[in-house]
Structure formats: structure tokens, C-alpha cells
Amino acid sequence: MSEWRIAGDTIDVSDNHGGSVMQYDSLWTELAAQGKRVRVVGNCQSACTTLLGHVPASRICVTPEAAFGFHLAQHEAGTETMWGGYPAGIRQWIQQQGGLTAEFKWLRAPDIYRYFQRC
Figure 1 (cartoon, one colour):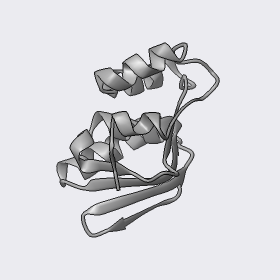
Figure 2 (cartoon, helix red, strand yellow):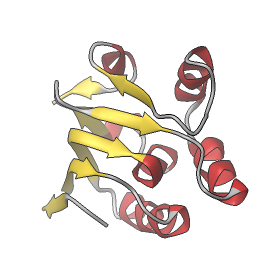
Figure 3 (cartoon, one colour):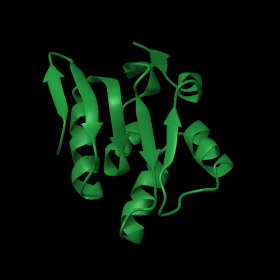
Figure 4 (cartoon, helix red, strand yellow):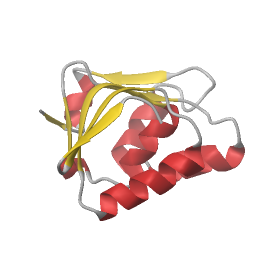
């Protein structure tokens, strides 16, 4: 799992391209249970976005360079896991962009600030 760093109770996500949805889902389940905060300072795309199903928005902050990249997973079960975990507002935003497809839908500033606090 690429490009992230844990410093105390905060995880910095900087250029995370994702990977196995099930591995990320399991990882974020564990880290959220530990009360970790997440600071998104770059791209969090694909399976990385499963964090949104585990870490409450109140424990996520974003910098101006932050971006979430959403798309269909390689397997239907992965897509169901990601989609099922996204908060309603994020699902609505994705639907407004045409829904999940093979192409990335990027949630960036200024829209990202409607869902997450600035760091």
C-alpha cells in the first residue's frame, strides 16, 4: 500500500493509487477502530477511498492538493464494498458526475470542502 505515513494518531495520505479493495477495507477498519485521524495531502484513489466507509468525516481533513479518485473496481464485490461504504453525500456527488465507471471521477477543491474540513 503506497504513499502514506502514520505520525502518532494521524495518517498522511499523499499519493495513494489503491490496490486490493479487501486489503484496504480491512486496513481502514483496523485504523479507524484505533481512532486514527486522516490528513489527505494528495491523491487517494481507487481502493484507498474505502477509508471513507470507516473513518468519520470529522476525523478527516484535506489540503488544497487533496483529491479522491472514484471508479469501478475490477471485481463486482470490490465495487460493492467501496460503494456501500461511501457516505450518502459522496455517493450523491459520484452520481451527479455520471456514477462509477472505468474512468476516474475526481473530487477536488473546491468541491471537496463541502464534505471535509481543511487541514
